[in-house]
Structures are given as C-alpha cells and as structure tokens.
Image (cartoon, rainbow, N blue to C red; front, side):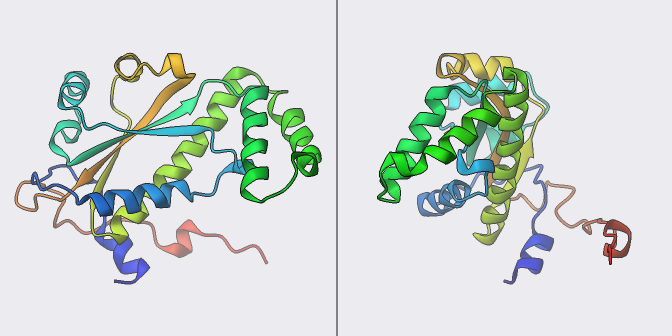
Length: 209
C-alpha cells in the first residue's frame, strides 16, 4: 500500500472491535514516534503507554471519547512544563555520547540552546513542548496507518485527572493529548465507510513563484 492510499485508508476511528494490536506493531509505531522531527532535536515530551484498565476507566468517566477504554492501546503524549538548564545539559551529554564526540565540541550548540530556550517563560516553553508533541502525534498516526493499525487522536479528556493518575507533575510533565490504537469495528463505526473529505490541493495550496 503506497503512502497516499494509506492516508486515504486511515481516519479517526470512533468504534474499535476489541482486537489487540500485536506487540511488534506497537513497538514499531513507538520507534517511529521516537524518530520524529523535533525542534533542536531535544524531544521535550514523553510518552506513556497506558495498559492499566483501572486508569483508563477512571479517565474515561470524564470524557466523551469511548475509545479510551475500547481501544487496544492508549498512548498519552505529555510535554515538559518547563525547560531547564539541566535538561539541555543532559541532552548535550547524550548527543556527545551518541556521536562519539567530546562534550566541548558541542559548547557552541549548547550555548545557543540555553540562550534561546532559557530566555523564554515557562509558559512559552510549555507551548513549544506541546507543539513538538503534536508533531510526534502526526508521525505516530502515519506509522500506525502504515502498519494497518487504526488510530484516534484525542484532546477531549480531563488532563488534570490524568496528570494526577500518572503522577506527571512530579516528573515535570503535563498531559497534552491521547492516541488510541486498535482495529476499527466497521459495522458499528458510522465513519468507517464514509468518503474522506479534504480540500482540493488547488484550494489548500498556494504556489509562490
């Protein structure tokens, strides 16, 4: 299945059939998310695969998204509430190790990150981190479709409750969005056989010559 056909096949599934996504497919989707393009390469977000049924049931009580409990897997995308000098230092240390460089070779890059990121407010950095998480979500959705796994991105949940359930504040994180994974129930999902509706490219795209 080529990319365009794959993207036409996918949609935000409303009803799942209860089948479990194989572990190897889940791991492939997570690996793809890990390879997402991210500003400065710093990945200011973390993922939580919520397998605990009790946590999912508690979260679903405050949401209109039945996919929270019905899907095979539920992934929470969380963003750093703030970016600290330690975050940047740890990132530089990791980069130096991965590229087999002395950390001093990255001093200029480290100073640039500190100058630009630490000059912003915590709120600005949280918005930036959240935007990076949304980019990762897009990668995850495409990777799921490539594996013929259905997915549903969700914002309609009680983020404060999820933050508490997962002790996110203690980790300096705040939940931003959810991604459900599984397999569509084509008989019960009213969207399963609906034509995908998207603007034609000549209306969506303007060429600047």
